[in-house]
Amino acid sequence: MAKFKFRLEKVERVRQLVEEQKKQEWAIQEQQLRRQRAKLNSLLQQKNDVMEFGYKQNNIAIKTAMYDYLAVLNENISFQQTQVIQCEKKTASAKKEWFLALQEKEKVETLREKQYEEYRKKQLRDEQKVLDDMRSRVEGI
Image (cartoon, rainbow, N blue to C red; front, side, top):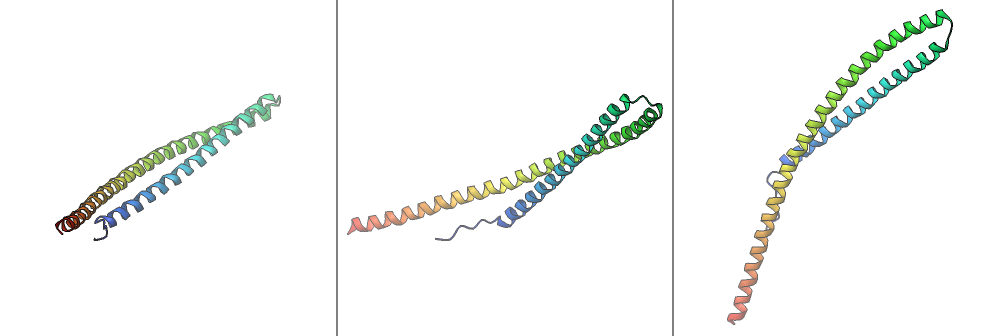
């Protein structure tokens, strides 16, 4: 009996490679998003610390410096928020691409399974024919 050979094996391998690549791209985007969020949280914490310190001060020069520094921090926070939003969009897009690649890979895997099932059924039918022939010969003797 001939050994099972999946005709779309090269296509299956390409789909696996594409799926792995898309998964890695998504993981990289997730990591970047976590870094951007951590940076934003750090800026927000820094702003809270400056405000807490500054409001306790009675010196007008320190309060003026605090407001100037808060203005710069607010700009940085605003910029970082846009960075986070952009990263979220890239991450969502990368995740969507990964899911699409995963679906394509699974389609080929399903075809492989169906073809293997057909191969096994044919193999079992052929074996049954041989057994039936042997039985009919034995009964004929």
